[in-house]
Image 1 (cartoon, rainbow, N blue to C red):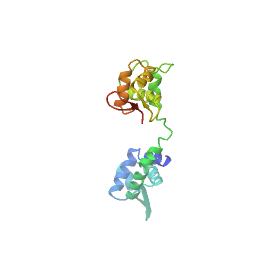
Image 2: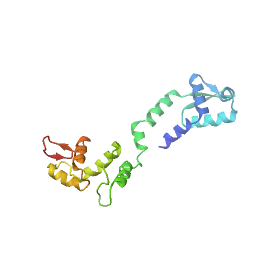
Image 3: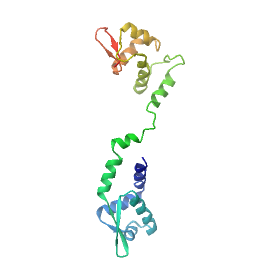
Image 4: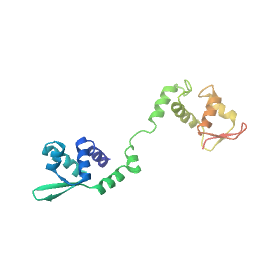
Length: 183
């Protein structure tokens, strides 16, 4: 995570991006970069230090000058590594994936667990259906009558709840009034 933040911070400055753009064309000394960008040499030196720190730029000494060049292979490798699915997934490890559902449930459910109303918005409806489907055991088969009995504890419109649970694939149903189950 820190590597990702350092990399993104290094790229989050317009002058550093300009330096990378110039170095993508050819190597330059700090003095040349300062003149090209109309910046003080100390400012360019600061930016180059940030880019060196994350490995995007390399330097070699020629005479009295350090000549900088873009390390394209390092840029590609770092980008691929830092922004891999695995690293991006790790960056959200401490995020509560159920926070939205919990908020919707708090807004739509009474203290006794029943619904105040069935949400009209699709996202909110999905959250409520994920809450309701927990009343059914996985792989247990239920008659339509039993499903209605369970759903009546949530809302009087059991037909809508039943239809939506099936429609959102949270429950399966055999045709013609057959059994319902949760996979």
